[in-house]
Image 1 (cartoon, rainbow over the protein chains, first blue to last red):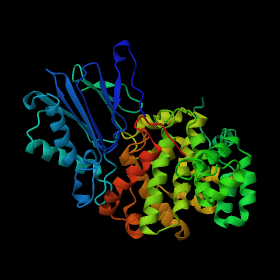
Image 2: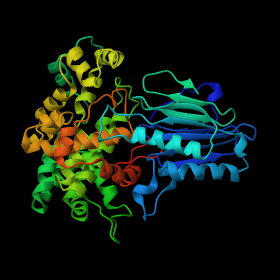
Image 3: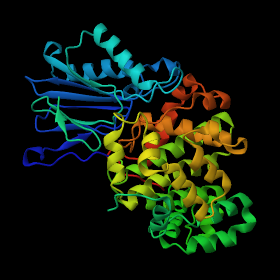
Length: 170
Length: 289
């Protein structure tokens, strides 16, 4: 798992979000963190005025592959994104103030028939973002890198860590 | 730190790696032999204090425990059965080895362990669903498939940094860069290590051919393809994936021949993930038993 740098400003407590999981925070002095996205997508929502943030780490594009079965909503983009957005609004965020950022969706080498979860996730996110009229302010997706991220709930900045590379902010 | 690598040096250096899983082949043979060999199994487990502790802890865990506590290894073996016991041994021994801190490949401590465990779990689930090979063999093959990379990282060759810096600009895949820069691929290191430790030929074949299962002799092509598929699915899941992870080519021909299809693999992911999350916490801590 990626170790983020630990400067004095980084001593805020972290809430860890696992794979197929989502968390929100109404506490400004908090990081929402998720590790090793691979082909998964992490979606962050942040209301800068109210300092309310949320993070989803979804593995697959659509819950339709599990029709009729009990599902974990956060595992799929089509169930996880609406759920996260609703949770944020319930916690006091305003839809018009929520900014969205998206990360992950790494892709394996070109293949026509196998291992295309990364590109399917990106396609699904794009479709959902249009349907839900999300205000997307940062895309850091695709490529052949394994990203870990943390959302600073005070600022809405997202710090991205990639193996063997310096951190950067989106 | 060395600037030039040769295969023999790498293999020699890794002989001194602490906790090498050298008793695994013997345990595997005994596990396959059934209950008549339990005495010998007890003797082997008792050779390793950490392993014996894990076996007893598991036998007394809520999942396996009855009203009576297991206080010795022979009782624990009877309670757990040889297959569960082998699984604990494989996980404990390789896990202990794979969490050893190393540089190279952009790994954080424990990353190779996390990734290998994910490959093992994917392999076990695919083996069960597709009836391609025996599930515990698939699990072990997943755990040890990348030992060569660990050995290279442990040997601390600066050549690994050279590879990382030149993929993908000069070499489209990690394998091609290894061939040119190291003079051999990490799969050859895996093969040499497993041969040295006396692992059965099936694991040697997996270690050597899992990246290119179409090249594998027919006798072991199914399991090499299974690990190839498991490896790529685990890479997509992200656990412990380093800088090299997304620079390997899928072998579509072998996957098709073995009967893999994308829809079924994607549909298996929720089960794979649930299983993985029994062993790896959201913070990345690995709980083998």
